[in-house]
Image (cartoon, rainbow, N blue to C red; front, top):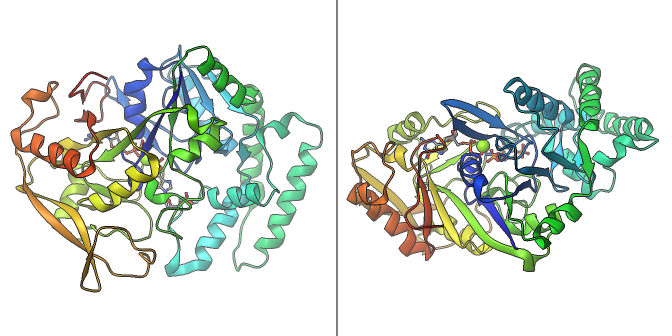
Length: 424
Ligand code: GDP
Ligand code: IMO
Ligand code: MG
């Protein structure tokens, strides 16, 4: 069996958590492959909303195995808090959650370095989630990091002290006051919690599952336009959010990738700094934010909102080899008389259909096509045929422009709010 990969095609928060939860019954294993507690994946059932940061979104299906892969970075405190809130809900993740020994740990000092670096950047800051993501991946690639498997090895405390001292030296170069001890105590409690989980070389288990004909779904975090290589650098995250990241983040050969499921919000949002060609800094943008409840799941920050951006979407589809699209938050567009879709950009008076290299410095102007909106509330519709005609035209336009079929339309945050236009 091949592994299917589910990932965001925009700037994150496309609704990956909800869709993974919807698709989990079709799989035996759900595996997160990159990112860390910068992610906030929401899912909702029985009218209760859950937000996951490190733990895969298949965790609410107790008979399914969930994996935190080697490509993920883990903050033991966030992990502990997440597991404790699951336990309060009567779900014991120790039973069905395995953690890669090769995943890297976010130290208290990584969080401080993240904050100090952002503070020093002033107005050019990335708008990081301040979870320590960048500094942790820097230590990973710099070959200084501490991995989950180290916590049960002799010499762990020395490794911790050595790296923390190194960070203290770096922090000395910043004009930034901090208190590591405050977080450290909790961090070590988190380490003890982590020890109660099955710490494994997850690449073997995942490949073994596939060999035995079991179905595995890889769950991406962030979105393609935040990818370290292909996103709007430097306003990106520090991991490969694209499909290739699933290979390195789980230990899967490229030839084992099956379906690539791209999640697209029916419009665009972005949190943090960086270019956003279709951003609406007007009443329409405010309306999208209000109707879409666009506030960060991890930081609570208001999300910047704008129209759907097709050149950016096509770029994401190309980079990932997307085989099917899932459109989320389509319900949020009800009540807009007109819907604009960006089909190209204008750069220095010239029309282009790609994201330019220097997008972070250049002022690119979106070129729009206007479609007619719909008024109907679609949150309670369960059959494709019952959807408003203009809604179907909107979906048809996306399919025609991208050349990829839409396999699910999400019409609300709830598990049951999903329309399957054709059988999976
Ligand atoms: P993720 O990071 O990709 O998992 O997305 P987030 O959970 O950060 O943000 C998506 C938000 O939209 C969450 O609050 C979800 O509950 C909500 N959501 C997901 N799908 C839909 C949908 O189809 N319609 C509406 N109205 N909300 C949705
Ligand atoms: P999910 O998985 C939206 C953004 C931050 C910032 C940039 C770098 O919920 O879609 P980092 O903390 O990674 O160094 O921040 O990336 N960012 C996200 N935006 N959704 C996310 O995750 C994000 N994770 C990071 O806002 O602009
Ligand atoms: Mg999110």
